[in-house]
Amino acid sequence: MNFDLSDEQRMLRDQARRFLDEKGSPGAARAILECDDPFDRDLWGGMANLGWMATAIPEAYGGAGLSHEELCVIAEELGRAIAPTPFSSSIYLAAETILLAGSEEQKQRYLPLLANGEKIGCVAVAEGVQRPGPADVSVRFEGSTLTGEKYPVADGDVADFAVVLARTGGGDRDLSLVLVDLDGVDRTGLETLDPSRSHARVRFGNTAGELLGAPGDGWSVMERVFDRAAILFAFEQVGGAQACLDMATDYAKSRYAFGRPIGSFQAIKHKLADMYIALELARSNALYGAWALANDAPDLPTAAAAARVAAIQAFALASKENIQTHGGMGYTWEVDAQLYYRRAALLSQTVGGERRWKDKLITRLETRNVA
Image (cartoon, rainbow, N blue to C red; front, side, top):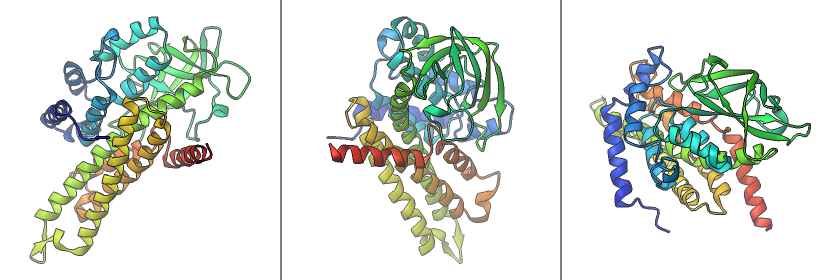
């Protein structure tokens, strides 16, 4: 297998990096922290003009018809720039769910709007801070109406519609997916460690909805969607970890103490080396995940869990050591290191935390070894 980027993918990466640099990354995330806007609308519009949302959506539904490998390239650059946009909610989650479970009519109705950035989608699964599972879902879908509340919902305050995991029967696994228009739905913003990626509490009070996919298939579909999204989030984390390593390395070369660059001191060398090793391990797992995702390989669930665990660890380590390398000033508001620490903490809990993905990885490896 050749995991190197093709010439076209390198061109896409370079274009994405130039565009995000021109938009002032990571300054765009800082600007969101300092204002009341939930995301950078100008950046979102520019991404739509470049066709990023359309990348992996088939041409039949208004997309570009490229593979998920190209989407992974974009995801890494978004992570490097810690872009404050609802891209992951709309594309990694909502679009993937509709592609996997939607009827032809639902795909024709929603995917073109997601592809051109006209509509923002989100996925609502969690009901509180507990580890999500089939038995924990209390939101109900009866007849054609939805009742209950979901939180935290990433981009739930800005999304136009949501894919909601709801109970449609009495059993623990009688769960289905429901498409809901969020216009008029009660939504309250939630405070998180990284306000540049907004979250909300969404309350449904006899809200009209429609089934997405077969009744009772909700949990199994979401498991597949989370596996696919885990790889894309892993690339965002790899991009963020790379940015942290670059920041720390540049500072270590330019900051002098006792007449020499601090990068010449053994303690700093060790920090940078540890960051590099964790990053390269995460990158190798993410690249294998990208191949598995693009080829819908049987090993996709295992590859997703491995990529997710390694990427969480790499970004967490890199964001912390970047602050430590900057010393006292690393903790200040003016230094961008805190922006990456915030994003690392947030992404570590998206679609499940490290412990959940470790358990999934162990279970899948045990199952494979028995077989």
